[in-house]
Length: 475
Ligand code: ACO
Image (cartoon, rainbow, N blue to C red):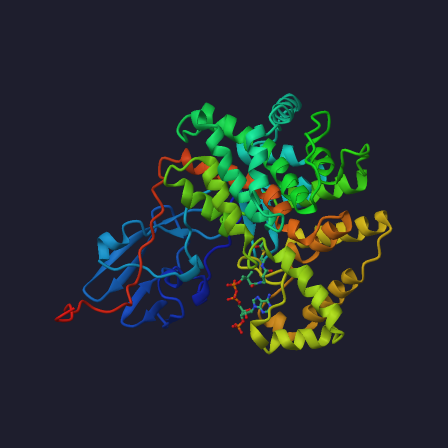
């Protein structure tokens, strides 16, 4: 296997050092010692080897930690014995420097704008694979043979029906319910129908749960949409492909036949593929954390849907459209809006911009932008919101505020404009993201449950509350 890691620099930059893992903001002295509050992390200049260790000197002692090799990207200091060795804990708010697991599914290089699924560039996957083929790749680790793909597709088509009782579940919710809340509730409720196959340690039960989730979650999503519209639910049409079936369930009615528009189908398939996985993002980490308790796959994915709902994560696609409409309706122009963002007025942010990992153009955003132009042209739709988005992007990319902070459009910047052109209401946008992300959640949950190193996820804390005090007399 080739290794593409650059050798460690002779005079390391503090931001590249293992010391940053422990002491954010620490600086280096001439001996490459990372200084902070009397602590020092020694970093050697020699190339990392498997036996190489990082040494931490702290008041009262020192401790050594192995440096673990990655196939690509940053190596890791293994601090699993940290508290045992030092009596200290580590603080890394937001997990900015901390790997929560080993994983072999997806690789991101945020500086170079690289995303790979199981080693394949996202551009190649998006150009050559279907949604289900990509799902197979993520879940099982290799591209499927035609027979494997055919069988997988067939199994999913045969599992699309929801229990009729579960359909009644939708009637109990208000028609104003946000479809993301409906989706997470109904996915959680799915587990109540399959109590005989929820054991995370039984590969056959995991397999059937995988198929059921992939088959039924799009149907639930479409019913959440229909519920909001006040229209009758359609039964799945198993003669159709995964994406075409989903479009029919959303846009077909009982009153007339539904013709799938191939432009919509192709564009939606591509968007779903681009969302299928993104390594240890907030919702995937949630799925893994919940799954680490040996909770079943449905419960874990339901938690992931709730994590995705937030506007700083998957909810950004809905928030982008709201932002574009506000700019249009305010009549103040894009320039004024950008000024408000830069002045941090009322905490206003440029939604769809910035990313925890990408400090370069998100490779998915490039592909989505191409799709936006294609879809709108093919549908003959001219949307002033797309013009506003493009103007906003250009102004932001040319502006020092965004350049200095390395803020670029992320995957969500243009998706909303496309989904809107397809006819989805904005409240469905994050639901579409969830369907895209489902194979990634499943792949990570399965990777975690079969990894012998897995432990229940249970972080520590730096306690900052009151010290022990006497109970007030007389109380
Ligand atoms: N607009 C304006 N300023 C921003 C933005 C933005 N979208 N994002 C970050 N910044 C600024 C911050 O104000 C901060 O500036 P400062 O140094 O002057 O204080 C600096 O850039 C760093 O920001 P952080 O919040 O520390 O960056 P972090 O990596 O924690 O946040 C996040 C990443 C949450 C994605 C952030 O960029 C954001 O809020 N973006 C908008 C929401 C969004 O589009 N989310 C979708 C992400 S992609 C996904 O989940 C599918």
